[in-house]
Image 1 (cartoon, rainbow, N blue to C red):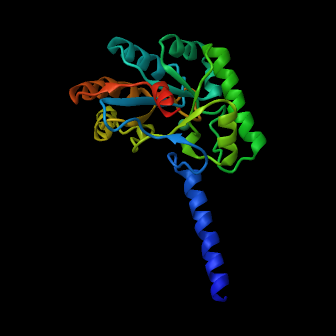
Image 2 (image 1 turned 90 degrees about the vertical axis):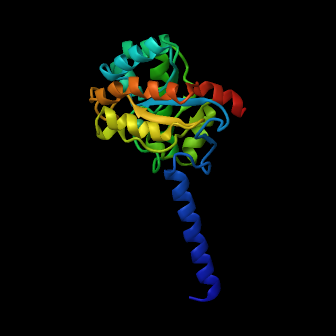
Image 3 (image 1 turned 180 degrees about the horizontal axis):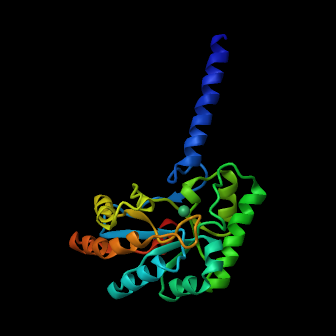
Length: 238
Ligand SMILES: [Zn+2]
């Protein structure tokens, strides 16, 4: 291989590595704009719950948030909203922000334009029909995206969100550990990813996340922080 061929090969490998990073990193802007955090100078943090609605955890989380008059965002799986329309409706009625988290929680990374469109459009319809509101927020399953995802999200008028850090509440490490992991991430502007549902089991157990929530809300308050709304970040970014 001569020098030019070697450089070309290196360039291609570099571009491929960059593209892969853009596809896998939930906060990469390579495949369209993503909001991964709010203002660092301020007192707001943002709680987000993915993969619901779920008849057990979502209902309990709504109760706890309601008692504290706290707001959160719920990125719903369209299929789950169809199975539990009453829960989806209660999330909207409580005034929380609703987001599209695709219809079937498939990894969008390697999907073509038609499949991507179906995943987003069917979830959009499902959330509209069950919750009675048009979601404006989008988060890709696992954060995995490609150019078709960016195009479809834009077409539907969505703002795409990432998150900071990792709590891994889906591994069910216990409510105390979930609270401890969240506490480490509580800095102004942080968008925290938690789960009120199980991506692949509509009735999956997320009771630990719900049980951790009162302590998490205490920690937010004790640090002089308050819960913001993702929809306010949309307005800031436009
Ligand atoms: Zn998810």
